[in-house]
Length: 336
Image (tube, rainbow, N blue to C red):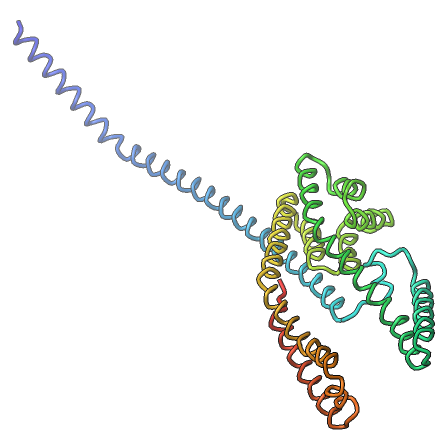
């Protein structure tokens, strides 16, 4: 009974295997055709996906090239404007008065210069009694001294702007990250910032109220504050307005760069201070020695002022001293 069951089972198994083999042989072509169709369909889908990815990548590259071209055009335009401004070695008197932060006009400056020159010339005439000396003192007091004071005030104001500008940029970065737009950030600095940055940003706000765009108003900052840092700020705003991007990150990087530049300037000034002191001592030493010799032996020094050969010696000495001072100044004068 057990053997019969085994034989029957074997026959059933062989019959099933034969039926399966026969079915596979009959359906083989259809199965292979379906496989090829499925593989072909998968390849078509993959090709379409790759084509979509390629198109997307091509679009991204094209957009990046457009942004890069826009940035290059913006930088070229701003660079041309800066070159036009740099062609003027000395800005006009009206611009220097504005850059110094003085609330006076050009006519008032000339009036003050004339009054100052008259007062200095009058005191020189009273003390010396010579018209030539009084005229020279009046010219120096009316033309030289006011412009020297104006240049001193201008440099001091520009230095104060450099010291405070990175802090104002940090405030703008935090306000933009908190959700405020750029206009409100500029108004915040114009109302709550420190001088002289507050005044300059207030002028940017006033320029916007007159109809200028934010990049154009910021570009005018370089005209009032002729510093590279102000030009960097105008470039960042112009590029962000035309090409887009993360403004807070750009301003944060600009603030960091400005602080690094200030640290580098301070380091260069500290390293060159010894050379500057040596140059001052060497330049002043001949005058100090001549003064001491004149105090001890006046007749020994008077020959330089009374004899023509002394005049020649003093002229040659002045030329060589000027050449030495010029060389030492160029050796210790570093720009960062």
